[in-house]
Picture 1 (tube, rainbow, N blue to C red):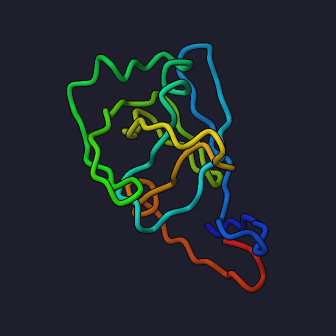
Picture 2 (cartoon, rainbow, N blue to C red):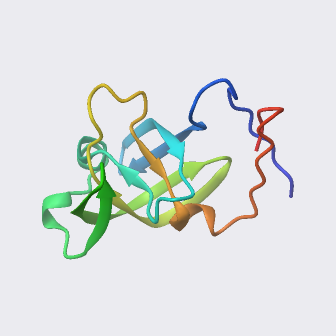
Amino acid sequence: MQRLYGFDNRLPWIIIPATVAGGEQKKTIRLALDTGASNVVIPYEVALNVGCSPSKSHEWVRLTVGGNEELAPKVILPYFECLGFRLRDFAVACHNLPESSPIDGLLGVTFLRRFEIKINYPHGYL
């Protein structure tokens, strides 16, 4: 099945909305497509808002942030939707990006490797 998603190719990032949910709570966030990021990364607050507590995590992942290696808790999101694909019980890392960032997190390889995704940068679509 072929799906198209348009993006603004004038920006330095490919910004993609994603929806995370748990229980009655649902939140849409802005993720930067990052083929160099091993994990999908979302802010702590978003995880908490959908009922996932990073502080109760028993699993941690290593992230390289600003040239420094940091540990980030991994949580299991009951629902994750991005690019028209819906995943249940999807593992993501929790880490806050700087407040001045135009994005909330990163769309990394743990999501991307599940699908065949082609980037047509000149025309601005995936």
